[in-house]
Image 1 (cartoon, rainbow, N blue to C red):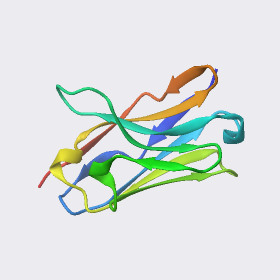
Image 2: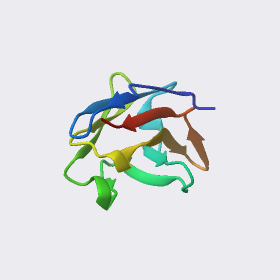
Image 3: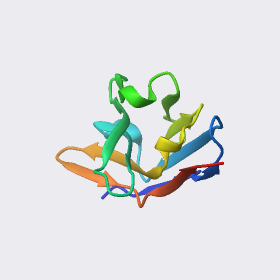
Image 4: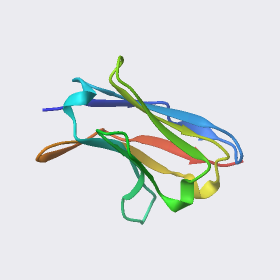
Amino acid sequence: QVQLVESGGGLVQPGGSLRLSCAASENIFSLNNMGWYRQAPGKQRELVATITRGGTINNADSVKGRFTLSRDNTKNTIDLQMNIMKPEDTAVYYCWVQKWPRDYWGQGTQVTVSS
C-alpha cells in the first residue's frame, strides 16, 4: 500500500504560478510510473503530466510549455510546477503512482485560477 500526501494547492490569479508536491510513503524507485491528473467540475479526470521510472515525461497538450513535472529521489516527492496559469486550469489535482499491478491516488488538492 503506497500512501500519497499532496500539498501546495490554493487560489492564484491568471498568469500566476503554483507548485504542487506529492510525498510518497516509499522509495519512488520502487514505482513504475507517477505523475499528476486533474478533474474539473462536470468533467472526467484527465492526465496532466506523468513520468516513467526511466524518466520519460508525458505532458498534456494543454499544459506544454507551462507546467513542469519533476521528482526528487532523495525526498520521494513528485512535484508539479505550474506557470502562466489560466482559469481553465481550475480543478482538483490528484497525485498518481503505479506500482504494478495497482494504481494509487492521493486525496486531491484544489487549484483555483481566478482574478
